[in-house]
Length: 325
Length: 264
Image (cartoon, rainbow over all chains, first blue to last red; front, side):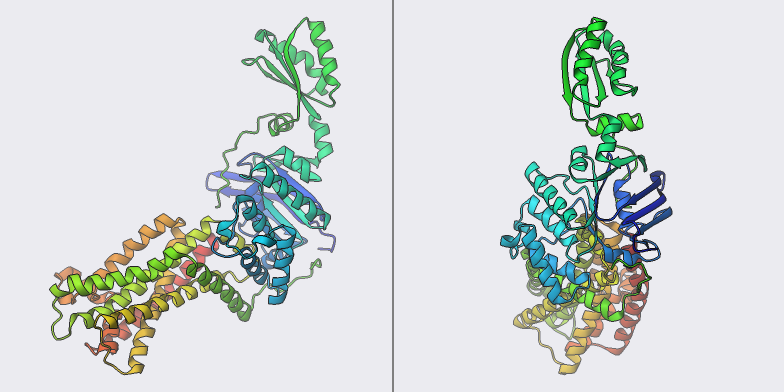
């Protein structure tokens, strides 16, 4: 319990809903002043974790604290320090943008004048000033999501919990939201961000934790994770599908020993490689084997590749329900 | 804010009231800007009033008292109960939109969500009731008691509506989905309002229904209101019966609603 407590500290969290285990011994430490990305497929336990940190859900066992305050013993102290923006825009349609923000500010117990000033500031910053006095029902999807994010900041909390903030947004709105998150980090806000998109975690987060079946499968900076999985994925296709496995075996050296993914039905091999130059080595290996590729390309690793490499299975939606419990 | 010394974990009554005020203001703004709600709140009850006054009323025998004077206290109480259904409906909408999650993550008094909501609905309900009485007078309703007695009748109806808001809140928070809340609401409200003395004298009903109607809190509320507003029948006995009902219902449903809210 010191002043330099981590923004969020979770120790051996378990969460069981009837027959489903949503969190299975999750431990995590989020440092202050950075964006921390929680990356995983649907059902991995991301939303459950966010709901526990936000004091919306009591964990079955384990401990979580926010800036040194235990979520179960000091929920109010935790709520004073967090802002939550979820997968929906939780704003009131019939109210204006300004009214929504002022209301949340008041509920953070800001004096009326300060709540008004803060609302103005947030509207300006999120480029909603022109729409400030219009009802939210006239806003576009992107504007609503920006307002929702703004509402989570209306009480100036030092920690922001963003649960899949760009799900369902068009590419332009997603881009705008990313810029806002980057700006928040520069201002010193700690952000816990959950996402299903590697690209998003890569772009925004300094630290990424991979969530798999309710626990952390791997954690590190984006560079560290990329070094673990290879910076890129080399895809090799062969016309003679019976050679797929042999090719996969031969290309194994390129990934530093990790097993490439061989899809015999498609005649396709996917290898995580450290650098594009691996493609040249691949050509030599294929040449030695006497195999002629029908196609070769370098791809950015997908969430699927990351999962496959680090957990040994694909990042399919996992059975644990992420519905509110 | 960064120090981790143990902070106040209690919210004072004054703070809880301030939060309730913020929530009530939010609700009133929302409601008054929603045309469909205004129609639900004002037009529908007035249509009911006109329907019973001019279509069914002629066939209903109420003895010494003329039907419009018999009807108005009944339809006012019925409107108040219907009006309280919006409490549960609104809460399910907030649940669905994620608003309840946002509110529960704020350092506000959690009770303020329910207190603010039921208070706002009470204010809306009282506006509806004033309109109803006004329209009633236009179609021939003549209150005949002292101003104090009329006011007391009005307050009894509001108290009745407020308690039913909490029942409605509990139902809404338990079923969690607006469509279900709407049908669930009508399932318990319809028998309650129609198997009562609101529209017809209970003496005209067959035995079992009459037995139910006579202990129905709705009947007690209507009889007390009728006595206090147009001097028909006794006031004290049904009023006490109704207040006993309300106290019992509050004791059961406030804790149930609060618990359902905590668990959502």
